Length: 342
Image 1: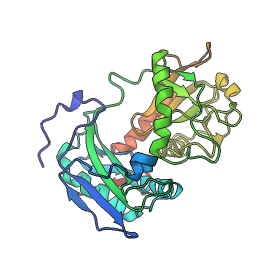
Image 2 (image 1 turned 180 degrees about the vertical axis):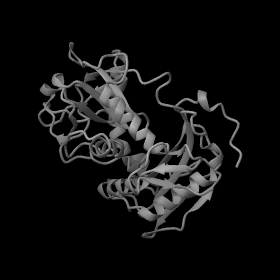
Image 3 (image 1 turned 180 degrees about the horizontal axis):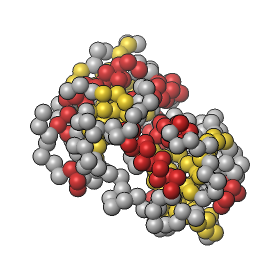
Image 4 (image 1 turned 45 degrees about the vertical axis):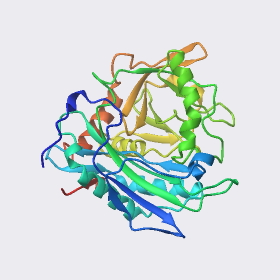
């Protein structure tokens, strides 16, 4: 299989249309059998539920070329399960896990020529999503839905290495207790846009959101979970019912315990404790770990001992180990790597 003529080493993190995508429609109480299509456009009613009341959820994962030349996807079963949870919370019909995995297989296989080669630093980003497609004018769930999956080749999230970023403590709330912070709903990200634009205008890279109820505990950023390292090497991740359960964060926690022999604590993290940590990172699909060098709380700076030049030593080990598993350089735990035959 011949790869596309793409300058893989200079790819950005943006959308490039590929040749095929998967579509399935929900109507009269059931999902149809689904199909592959070359049409990248979506045609829906002007009164569709997604346009009127933001009834939509999505996932994000990647396909890699391993050191052995295989095309693999990292833990897609967890993405499938999380999408089921998102759909239930938004009163949408769950797309079955086994069909989600089959859709991933079909789309990646059909676009195998777009999977970047090993060592290029690039990957194939996979975006499954679902939305209310039938007309809705009264406030209620739609009657019909569409599930789609497309892929696009993307470059490394960090060009020239992962330099630590500076983030601010946000004055905005990301998610309310008993709200939708724990699911991957499009509306959560819409709510974060003003906050991130404001942060960028003020010279910061990201936001640190505190819990909406007391504004005393660390939650997450607009699109990533926090991971801290104490001065004695313990890995700490915030725990809250309104934090999205990041697949990357859960994987890093396992790696910390079972590969690196580190102590791990998943618990409430008071903001007052942040100044005591040695390292900080943001966990997500795009970058795996984004190192944080500084947190600014309304003019007061918290500078981590790991500094602003490079990842801290523990965060670097976590990053190297997880990417090693994803790329086939290290043996993966059972069930983590889903191979796609092409």
